[in-house]
Amino acid sequence: MKIAIIGNGISGSSAKRIAKEYGHEATIISTNVQIASKSALATIRPTWFTKAQKVSIDRSWAWYKHWNATITKIGTVSNWKDPTKTKEQEDWWLVNPLSVLEEPDIVGIVPYMDMLRNNYDAVLDASGVSLSAELDFFYGATLVSKKAKADFMPLRIHHIRPYHSVHIVESDGMIRLGSSISKNKEKCVNEIYKMKELCEDLKLVSKVNDWELLMGIRTQGKNKEISEPELGNPYTKIGGLHRTGYALAPDLVGQWINSL
Image (cartoon, rainbow, N blue to C red; front, side):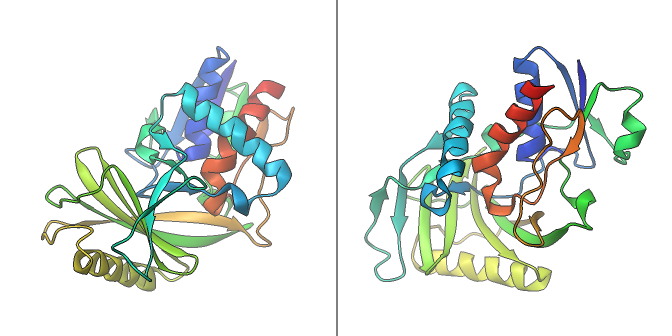
C-alpha cells in the first residue's frame, strides 16, 4: 500500500516509521527542508494523562524503544527554590526529537488531500497548520549553540516557576535550550532569551555569543480536543496534540495504519 503523509512532525514521522514496519511504501510531503520540530526536548508526564491515555503512552514508548530513540524515564530536575540541588525524578519521560523525526521525501507546496487520492492508497494529514480552522496556534522557541558548554549532560530540566520549566539538552553537537511557548510570537521570543540569561546566571550553560533562535508552531484544538485519525478511513487527519504529541502520536497513527 502507498501512503502519503503530509507533515513531518512527530505524527508524520511516526506514521512513516510504522508504515514501513508493516511493509507499506510511505512518503512524507512537507514544506520543511529538514525535520519539523524546533523543540529542545519532548516531555511526557504520565500524571498529566487519563487512565486510557496512559495505555496509549505505554504503546508509544514501546515504539520509541523499538526505534532506538534517545529516551529516558528519569529526569535530572532542579527548581527556583534552590537551583544548586538536583533530583532524579522518575515521572519525567523524555524524548530527544532529533532521534525520532524524519526528513521529508518531497519538499514544496503541500497539496490538498483530495489531490493525492489518485496516486496514493491512503493519506494522513499530519500538518497541523493546514487544519487552522479547527486549531489554535502556539509559537515555540528554542536557542541552539555550538560553543556553549554545560556540566550536566545529556538532559536537564530546571523549573523556573510552577508549571513552567526550561529544558537543556546536548544533541547533534550542540546545546539546545528551550522551549518557550506563547500565542504571541514576540512574547515567546522575549521569554526564551530571559530563560537563557537565567541559565547563564545559574551557570547551567556558559555565556557565548553564537546562540541561534529556532521558531516552531504547535497546534491545539479549540476545546483542547485532539483530532484523532479515523480508524478504517484511508483519508484522514491528526492534529491538535500540542504538548501531548510525543505521548500519543505514535500509538494513534499506529492504530490507524493497522486498521487499513
